Length: 421
Image (cartoon, rainbow, N blue to C red):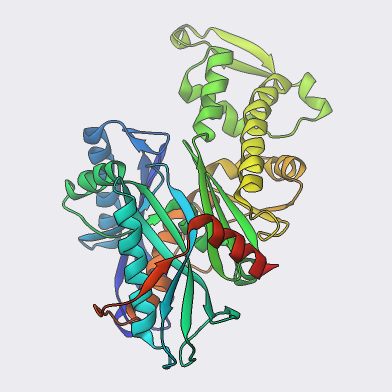
């Protein structure tokens, strides 16, 4: 899809979250930027921790969300870009090498490696669906750290690929329920990748940064370096778990727990919290007006306990990924869970990194209610189409026979880390 074709194209993004569904309809205007024509968000039903648990409820939620955006935009849409937060996404870096025998490298050479890599990976992973195959570096003979090999020559061309896949059955279920709503899926995008595209600036992607999307049922991790996504991960803990903890400990309903968290919650305590009291309706006795009185410090302790567990898990995942140093000393928090007061300071303390809140950047037509962290994934889905469809479409397809070898995951990762350092 060329940039010319992208101009004046409509892009519809559908974010299927555990607690919230969101749909944005945008037009790509003449300068290549996005202008929002319609949007809508609804409470999500039928999804738990990112995975579908009730197809009918998910279908109803999708229809209501999309119809609201269509009514605002006064447009009927057929194609959507959707996010993937389920299926236990896996992230691998693998090298693939092609013999080029001295000729100048062209689009066909690069496309042939991509085609082989995808075919080879899928042949070895029968229960996985390949979501992304992202080139993150090239080597010609012994010349490493090449960003663009076009026009160069040598005996061997090696491509370092970041491959992201997810469980095929989970992807099939997600695709089926979207198609039941009479919608065609233009492409799938890993949620963490989309969120990073929405709120990470170019310098951060180049120097190294980790974007953490704190959703309702999951927390997603995306690590960037040298302009590329180099690692993704997901933890099945989110803001809904904090709400559940409050409801369980305080014997109140989920609705009241969410309200109390939003109005009075904080990730950090203060001396005045012991002197501030809150009225908490008791579950099942709301009509009688029976309440418990608690101190605000008790609420904050409940919130802190779950958030500390979350950030400690994130710290462990970042460390074990092997990319901690590459991703630099910077963290971006986004997603609905990032809106809690004091969360930046708590995250900075536990992760020992600089932390900022990430919001969608440089999008026209966003209202004050839709430009916050909870809408990063939906905006990022549109930006993925804008940025990646044009890039992928410029690479020519080929079916020529090739002589390639897969050098293996562990050796490739170690080799790539050595190149970086």
